[in-house]
Length: 341
Image (cartoon, rainbow, N blue to C red; front, side, top):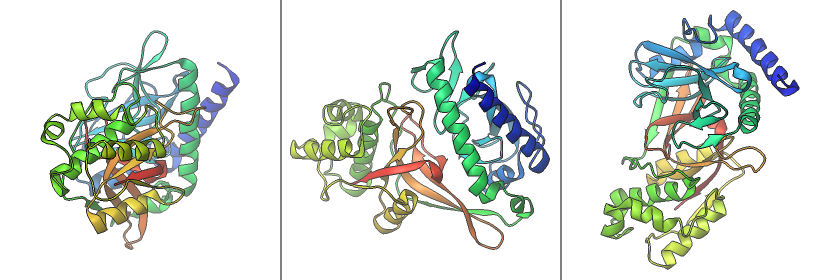
């Protein structure tokens, strides 16, 4: 094991010890977690997700456990060693459902298994080398440590939080569930899902019938306008040029919000214009690391978490994940830029 690996293992062990003493009793490696951390149980109870059916240990680099995935009677929840919920869904099935053996995780929407030499993405089939996976595991571990120092839901106060509740705000329509992204084309796909939403619920002149009825054709076309592994400017310029070429039609010009509270901005758009927003999920290891590439999704709702004193204590985005699923809820700390039409 290299020096970086030993450091990560020591950090994980320290967090496990903390978790055992202050949140819940965990069993590592291939054993099941006996109970949910109280902070996670508060959330699943508030979201009416029922009882735990199965819990998977999720590994990082050097085979250490870095998170857990609890399959619930309804939905799933993924949380780290300190009891911080990273992502969950009260309606979608677990990404690890029916899988056996060693399973791996590297942050929101990144679910992997291991081949003989590398790590395979369960959604796209994309391969991460051992070096790449080691790098993103370190990033995830650092993010977990930061969450533990700031997140109310992992604190001792939550253990007496019998009045914990959630409040959900969403657009009135449902985004289409499209699963075309296999080659880092998440920006184009998020734009397609957004345009289809506009055409379905806000302006049926946004797309021609041929594109509306065949969104894969629209996706193939937009790939000529929006580059792979794109930035916010790539999406803005691509949509603007597609509009000029009459691929799509919308009244306002695409623009970006960045450098601030994207969660608050997305909430504002839901309340004021009933509109979804294209959101950049940071630290997404499929595209992360040295090149600072991340993952674009469409967010169409938010979750607010309140304690028994009606104080806002946590927040989540509700997203279409770009892999064919709606209602995936991702912790707000993974936000970055967003693009809107």
